[in-house]
Image (tube, rainbow, N blue to C red; front, side, top):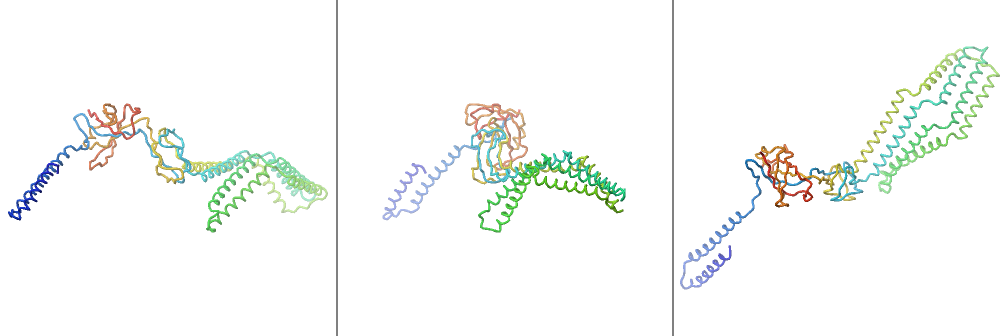
Length: 465
């Protein structure tokens, strides 16, 4: 109700009051008064309806898709050519956030990092296991040493001498026994030379790898124990404490073995072999002094001894078999695969940029827990732009094809025109406001304009002919 009608209503109301006062004297009919009030209300209602109709005419309608014989027009939005919502493959607390919104990054650059102490320890343990497997493979492929062949040859000589003594019988037993005793002495001399030569480098490398593996296992056990060291549940802490104790003992044993190999034979070890040699020489002297009595059953035993010694010598000279090398190689390959698996688990705790671009959004802070697969950083390549519109209905999209030219006008840049081409049409429809529509992507010819911003609206005209 505007001011005019309000004033009219006030006049009618005043007349009503005046006539009401006079009704005491003149007794005017009530119907006249009611007619005046109804007329005023009707006039106000007509005016309100007129205003509503005027407002409806002034309201801005939603922009429709404009169709002509040669063009299809619609509203579109600006978006980067490449964009990605990045998420961790693993989960855990964020310990490092290396970027913020607006930062430019390169492909492969680390953007954020989760806690990875356990994963790093697992990688170190796998590296030590691989080093041990590779050292074992090298040791197998290296073949026998000169000392090992000498020991095997001496064993053959001893076995042959023993067989000759047995076959010759009692009259010639003393001479054969001397040969056996002499072979025993030769064997002990070869063993003494081997002990004095010290440990081979391959054996030392394998032992060092065992030490590192045991050390990494001890670190893991210590880490597990530190997490529950002050736990109230003693039943839970006891097995972890026991595991730490066992890991400590294993490490100490491996370290002691490595140190022993590194130091070489001790004087005591050399003295033991020397004592055995002296014993053998004494036995040789005793054999020369008195003949031995040989039984018939000893002949078969002596023959078997020769065959066994000859087979051992042939095996030693031949070196490792193909099967032994294959087993060692398989062990090295298995250790390498375990290292790769541990490295992959470690990589899942790092978030890296898949391409060059700019950080468009960061949805996490240091100290927060990241869940696997939940996006935390948005990366976009803002060096090139494209327009996306989902306003084209099924009646419009049949006229549009990739490669058609497009005239573009941005709302933020009035008076300026841009050009482009239809890049692709999404084959799958969506439902928008009850209509079946399709998304069309338009590639800008001048995509490097620095004034363009993500999300800008534009009016596009697709030339269908």
